[in-house]
Amino acid sequence: MTERNLHRVLTFSIAAVWLVNGLFCKVLNLVERHEQIVAQILGSDFSRPMTLLIGLSEIGMAVWVLSGINTRLNALAQITIVATMNVLEFVLVPDLLLWGRMNAAFALLFILVVYYNEFELNRKLTRQT
Image (cartoon, rainbow, N blue to C red):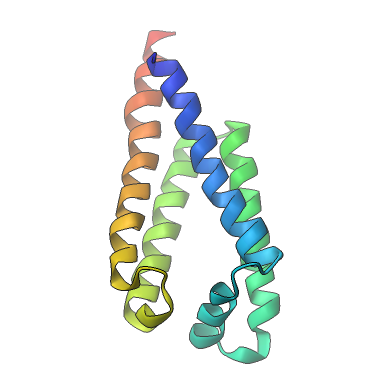
C-alpha cells in the first residue's frame, strides 16, 4: 500500500470513529452508557441535550477531518479533545467505560494514529508535491 493510500485509509478511519461515536452512540442514543457518563460528570438534568450536543460536535469533527481544511489544527484539536475526555472519564467514571481504565490505552492508540497520519504521513506527502 502506498503512503498516499495509507493516509486516505487512516483519514477515513479516523472520520468513521468520530461519525460512529457521534451519530450512533450519542445522537441516536444506541449506546446508553454515553449519556450515563455525561449524566454522572455534568449532572442528569441536562444529560440528554448535552449528549446530543457532544454527538453533533463529533459528527462535525468527522466532516472537518474529511474536508482536509486546516489539517494540523484539526489533528491538534482531536488529540486535545480525546486526551481531555479520556482523562476526565478515567478519573470520574471508570466504572461506566467499556473497558474500564483500559479505555485509556485505546485512546492513546487513537491519538498516536491521528498524530502519525497528520504529522508523519501528511507532512511527508506534502513535501513530495
